Image 1 (tube, rainbow, N blue to C red):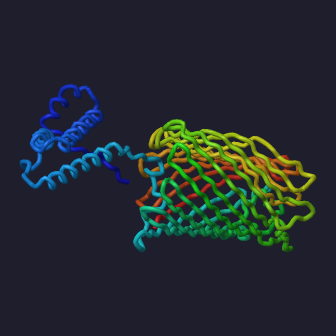
Image 2 (image 1 turned 90 degrees about the horizontal axis):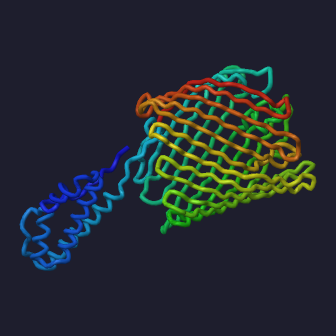
Image 3 (image 1 turned 120 degrees about the vertical axis):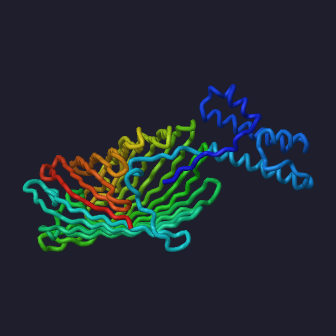
Length: 483
C-alpha cells in the first residue's frame, strides 16, 4: 500500500518574517497553507505586473537559477504562464491529499493478490483455499445427530481489467466437499460470475452482472423438507443491470434483475422425486434516490417491486407479486465509518384466492464502522420475500441480521467473530423457523500470499414444528494461497 505525500514550493526571504512572526503560533498545516498562499500571490504578481517589477518581486520569493533573462516578450509571457499554472496545480494536489485509511483486513491480507499481468490492462488472479472440518450434525436433523469429518477445497480464478476507465471481471470457482464416512453427502458446486462497468461520463455509470452456477441445497434449510438421499442440486441463472448517477447533491439509480432456478430430480430411499414444481423465475426492479443534506449525511428513498412465477403449480397457484418501500439516512463522517439504515413498508399479494396478502414493516441496515484502524464492525440486515420450496406455500418472508467484528493483532494476525440470525415465516401455513449461528475464528498471514486459519462455530434452528429443530457445531483448520 502506497501513500501520497504533500509537496509545496517553499518561500524565500519575504516569507521568513511571516513564518517567524504571526504564524509562529499556528499549526504546521496552517503554516503550510499560508506559505502556499504567499507563493501563489507572488506568482500572480509576476503574471500581472511589468517586466522589471515582476522580476524584482518574484526574486524575493522564489530563487531562480539566474537573473531574469532578456528573451523576447512572447517567450517571457509563456514562461510566466507555465509557472503560474504549475503553482495552481501544486496547490490543488496538496489540498486534495488525504491520509491513507487502513482496516483490519488491509493490515492482515490482500483480497486477491496483485495478480499476473497477461496482457496490457488485463490481470489474472488465483485463490486456493482448503479446509479440514469436523461437523457434529452433517444432516442438520434432530437426535440422533450424525457427525463426520470432511475436507473442503475451494479454487477460483479471477480475470479482470486494469484500465483508467471502465472495468470488467470474470470469476470462475468451485467448492468440492469430501466426507470421510458419509460419502453420499459429497458434493461439487461450480460457478461463473461476470461483471462490467461502463463509465459514461458526467457522473453516470452503467453496471451489469451475470451469474451461472451449479449449486446444492444445504441440509437443514427450508428446501430440505423431504430429506432426500443426497443433497438437492439446482442450476441458478442470474442477470442484473443498473444505471446510476452519483457524486452530486442528488444521486439517482435504477436497476432490474432476473433470477432463475431449475432443480434436478432427487431420490428418496432410492425412489425418484420430481422437483420441477420448484422451478421458478423472479423478476425485480428497483429505483433509489439519495439527497445530500450535508457533507457527511444523505437521506434516501427506495422502491422495489417483484414478480414470482412458478413453472408448475400443483393444486394451488404460488405465483405472487409485491413491493417494498424504504426511507432512511446514510451517514459517513469519515472513511472509517459508513452507516445506512432505513425503515418502510413491505407487501406481497398472491394469485391463490385462499392465501391472504402479507404486509409488514420493512427494514434495511448496513454499517461499516472502524473506531480504530485495527478494529472493524460490520452489520447488515434486511427483509425479503423468497420463493417457496414447498407445495401449498407461495412464499417465505425472510428477516436477516448479520453482525461481524474483526480485530487485527499486528499485521499478521486477525481475530474475528460472526453472529447471524434468520427468521423464516412460511405463508399459507402455520410454520415459523428461527435460525441462529455463531462463528469464532483466527486468521494468520504466514507469508505474503499464504494464510492459515482456525475456527469454531455453533448453529441452532428452532421451529414451532418440533421435528425440524436441531443444533450442531463445527471446528476446523484452513489454509489459503493467493496465486
